Image (cartoon, rainbow over all chains, first blue to last red; front, top):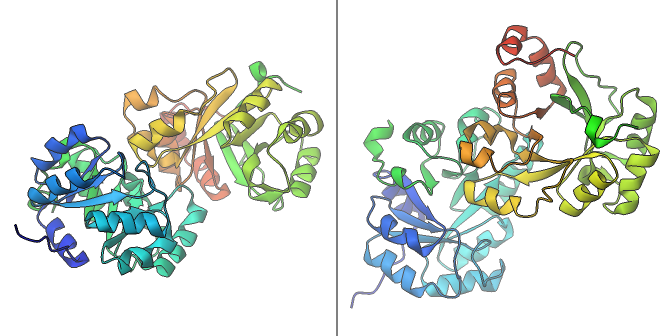
Length: 200
Length: 197
């Protein structure tokens, strides 16, 4: 039995260079499709956070990475101990909107993804300030589909950016990648096989 | 004081704190939305203005979010349109004869469905979608879930996006500069059937 070596943030980002769309799944039923796709990572947005071991093993066995949304899965609290639990379970990345958890996630040796929810123009500066303070490895912007439209309003971010939310078509994906995202998170299965060469 | 059946929802709500003397550009079906202000400014604006403004309850400092606050808005200030993220407050405002708009967050498709679970789905309670800019990226099946009237609020930052959003929503919330841009885009306005005031 070979031991699993957790990826660094650089490892994660380099995988996106070939296949930029990560598979966002909200139930186990979509897992098979995600594992059979080119998606380099599976983002788990729902499910039982206390019963992830089988899913994590299957994702790793397929050669993909797994990120779990701490705020959305059942059974866990978005705090230090929730992060520790996910890290001990073997997830590669933890996603949360709680910026104060980023140091905890990093200290656990896991990729820290700060989810930024953008709803109002006047919140943009606050969000960017929060990002500078939390220092995640990666930021995920939601709703990602509006990224091309708000790009001029958003100050330069110092961290690699994913975009998720309402991204459903190759055109949507190409637009957000052209707007500066290094990857896309999407529940649209049709995008999971999108190749990097196709979005240039 | 108008009741819910006769309340007119302007197509354009111009966001304001009530302290800057903002008024909607002439020629538009537009009104004022008071937000990010305090109770004193709300009272002053509501009592001095000929047309009562719409109010974003959750962002008014000093104003609660209970039945007393709802009664105050309706009975004392004659507020006809109120935005809130609290379903029970929206329900109470509608019961008091006003038009309530429940703020629903739409960051992704699964989150949208979850946000809608708390909607009262009763007469005189519509929906505010935040950020409003996502509205014209939604599928018809998602738009069908949204209780009308529908107002788009957030990240609508130019006249083009505003007019595109008005094609699928009854109203939008924009900053004064964007409202001015819409007023200057009369040709585009005719293109989407935006009726003058």
